[in-house]
Amino acid sequence: MTEQPVEPVGWVTVPDVAERLEVPVTRVHQMLRDHHLLAVRRDGVLRIPAELVAGKAVLKHLPGVLTLLFDAGYNDEEAMRWLYTEDDSLPGGTPAVALDGAGATEVKRRAQALGF
Image 1 (cartoon, rainbow, N blue to C red):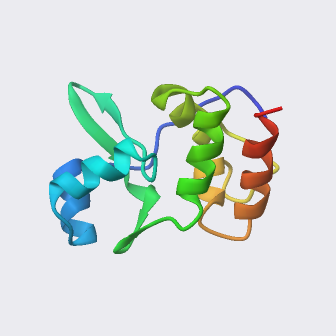
Image 2 (cartoon, rainbow, N blue to C red):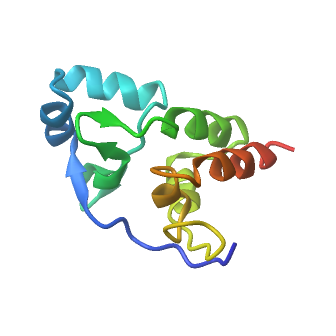
């Protein structure tokens, strides 16, 4: 992987995600605590990359990848940086984008390798 983190295409707030997923805001906060979703503070506001929420659901493989990253000792900022570090060998150019397609298995494999 190259060491060039990129910004997500767009950000959404916790209330925006709650509306998309049709759940209470408290449920989104629980998803963040359980590492089923990832958010970081930007300009004092907790923000979630828009592409991690596909339609009315969180990307299928995201919770598993986040579990692997946190088990490897990553914090929220480090996990975000890993997900958005450019990698030309992945479809879409970053692990976050590759999670929403055929590259998901490879992203999971790479996240798993971080624990060793």
